Length: 376
Image (cartoon, rainbow, N blue to C red; front, top):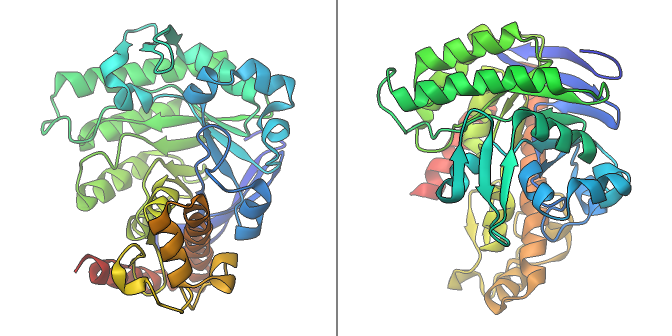
């Protein structure tokens, strides 16, 4: 990993590890959660509020920013850091997930992926090279290769022709992306694919290691496989990936799933779950999920989470948030988002402390108990 980047592991608890990932725009203490700012903004939350909540790094989506406002405009305004007001580290996804999410309008070929714009129907070609060029124009600190994202439940067999072909194409695209990179002030991560096949996941991870990426991600998970399958697939890939490089589990968001992955040695996470749940009135708390649209909270004077130090819990009651959410007031979703983001960021802070203390298993057990109680 070339300067100004570095990644240093500082503590371990089994396979779990805590460390420091240095970037040109700040140091990220890992394991870390990245709030999702698809279009360059976390919905309803300002950069100052993100910083106050403890955010270290934010994620934006390459495909959607390419659609609007366009990477050229972002570059003219100083890249994501200058354009958005978030001066800390940024990570940009490559657009590979849109191969799945926009599958009805996407055509995958060896050259790349052709999308029909959801805005005006314009056909847009995204290649491994253009994905790198767009992210370099956006100026993110960490960029991702273009991959063909296949849902992990797309096959029940290691010999599935579709999943094997997508995995092999992902590797060819990764090599092309590696050659296309020009900026030295941007890390480019490879992405492990392979559906639900342990053999393909292992082979993909081994091949990516041969390309000497400075960091690696697990893609195509959280799309249908069981939690047990996911843990096994991540662990298999880690047997092949270099321990000295940062590892990123893409798009996984339940608190218990994050801690499962931390225990396997994952360093970075992102998910829309905390803000999406917040807009629907579902809050993560130290005592389980709160569904604030339920009638029983209409007159509840307690803060959303008495154990939380966020600005929402310091000033507002469950009754007030319930009123805002039931009335359709935008402030309700905003205050709930601030709380949920702080919950996730506190969870990662607790994970880092637990790893240093050699006590991650206790934190996992408590989180799993809360998840089970909330599901009951």
